[in-house]
Structure formats: structure tokens, C-alpha cells
Amino acid sequence: MIEKSINYPFAQILADWPEARLREAIDRAGPGDVQRALRREQLFPEDLAALLSPAAVPFLEDMAQAAHRLTRQHFGRTIGLYAPIYLSNICYSDCLYCGYALHSGSLGDRRTLTPAEIRAECAILAGHGFQNILLLTGEAPKVAPVSYLAQAVAIAREYFASVAVEIYALDEAGYRALVDRGLEGVTLYMETYHRETYAAVHKRGRKRHYDYRLEAMARAGRAGVRRLSIGALLGLYHWWADGFWMGLHARQLQKECWQSAVSISFPRLRHVPERYRVQHLPSDRELVQLMLALRLFLPEVGFNLSTRESAGLRDHLIPLGVTMMSAGSSTRPGGYAHLDDDAALEQFEIEDGRSPEEVVAAIRRAGYDPVWKDFDAAFIE
Image 1 (cartoon, helix red, strand yellow):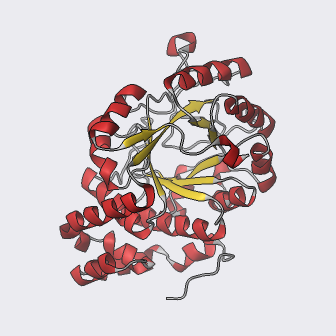
Image 2 (tube, rainbow, N blue to C red; image 1 turned 30 degrees about the vertical axis):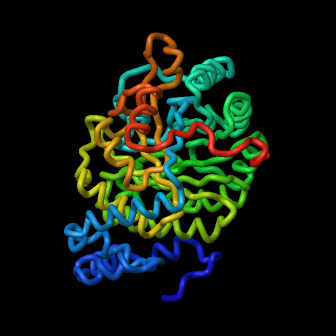
């Protein structure tokens, strides 16, 4: 199969793999296709479809062994640690599944941290040993403009070796302004790659612009962001479809943004406002199959695992390709300093409430080395 050039926009690659073609590839996949994919050093999209198909279920143990071997080969026995800092829970978009949404009905105070409050959050997490931090906001550029985000990045860089953001999609100049203040990473979930579902769940706000969001990570890479992390909210649409399209997206970013490291996340949509019902939540077995298939398809891509999953499941998933884990997380602004007795609205409830120290102990029990910082600051400067 001829690979697309690195200048081929991802929207066109996505158009080459509509749902009808993907369903056909999955439906016709048989045991021989799965075994063939397991033997290949570099997989094609058809191989990924086979590994996501029902035909792959009897081969999950073989897939797990191959995934473990590839992860050890490319990442060793290390698990990086990070924590989120929510800068603002004010949001002008109306995403049906999100507690921050404009009309979610969620109770709690809306707030945006001041520079002093950002410092307080940073100091607490730095005290636990974190050196990788993720700054998050709602979709409210008037409340948290690029100038505010740049200041927040600069403050965080005083405490941490690596600072990333998970914010609304920016243009290339916006990402470059953050890079100039010390930004190293951008996390941006497409939420779902299925265009019709995307339109149905995003009712209002700038997030409704599917194509602008789809190409945001390529813009971040061109702006000099060193770490690009993508994901889909598993539960909005079929896990095998969003997982397949996410795999294509990650591979395209590897080619187009070859100077950046690419990683993917696997957040399952568990806690949602009452107005929304999750219809496609993958089971534990389906989550495992997705992770294994993507590790075989993307051997050099990092895997992030957040506190959306339970402690027990997270511990069992470690050997299957995980390279980064969050720990001791709070999903509300000021959550670490307990501003106003935790009155601020949180985005969602976490499943793994262990302290960073407890997560570190669990990683060590699994035979892996927890890493707070995996590079020298001089490398990114």
C-alpha cells in the first residue's frame, strides 16, 4: 500500500476511511488476518482494522505479549508521572457530555485562578515531586486568552521541567506564543472523529468547528510544540471506529510533525451530566483490545492513562503499553490548595483517588520505574 505524503492533510486521510469502508474491513477480518498482523513489523491500516475486529479476541494474549515486548523495546521499564492543574472551569461551549458545559446543570462555583493561586497549585504539586504538569481550561478564550495562558505557562515553568496545556484549539501563532514562554506539550482530544456524532454533542461555541479542531495538533507541531497528545472520549461513538481513526491521526502526526513526540490517551466517558446518556461505553476487555491494537500499530507512540480509570484496572493495564500516568489528580480549579473548601465546580469525578506516593508504590510493585522527569531542561531550551 502506498503511504500518503507528509503534506497530505489528515482530513483527506480520514475521508479515505469512512465508516462504511472501516466496517467492511472489520467484518471481513478473520483469524488469518489477525495472525498476519501479528507477524508484521510495520502494520497497515487494514491490519489495525483486523486487530480491532471480533476475530482478534481469541488472540488477545498473543497481542498482549507482543505489545509488552514492543513497549519494553521502545520505552524500557519506565512510567512517567504527571498531574493536571485546572486554571479555569468557565466554558462558553455546550458539550452535552461535559460538567463544565454552559448548560450542563452542574452545581459548583465557576472560577479562574489568579497568578497567585496558580503558584499555590504549582508549589503543592512540585512538593510531591512532579516535574510534568498539564494546565487545563474550559472553552472560554475571553476569560482565559492566550496572554493569560502564556503567563500561566511561564509561572509553571518556574516549578516544573515540562509544561503542557489542554485548552481550546489555537491558531499557529497562538501556540507559538505559548512555546515562547516555555510550553513543551499540547493535549487536545478530538472527542469523537465521527463527524455526525461530533455535531450532535457539541451544541454551541467555537468547539463546534470540527475541521478547525481536527487540524489543531498539526498547527501546534508547526509552532514548535515538542509533545503532541491526542485522544477520543471513548463512549461518544463506537470504540473500534474512534480508535481506528485515532490511530491514523497519530501516525499522520508522526510523519508531518516528525520533530515532535506523539502520544495518545484512552479516557472512558463515565461521569456525565444527567441530560446525556453514554451509549457506546467500551467494556474493560474492549479497552484492553483497543490499547493492544494501537500499541502494535504505533510502537513508538506514548500511552497516557488518567485517573478516569479505577486503581485496580490502571495497575493491570501498566504492562500493556502504558508510558505515562496521572496521579493525585483534581479536576477543579484550586483543587490542590482546597480553595473555598472545594466549592469550585469539577469537570468529572475521578476513579483513582490514590495519592502520588501510592501510585508510585503501585508502579514499583508492577516491576516498573516511576519517572518524574525524563529529560534535562536544557534539552528543550
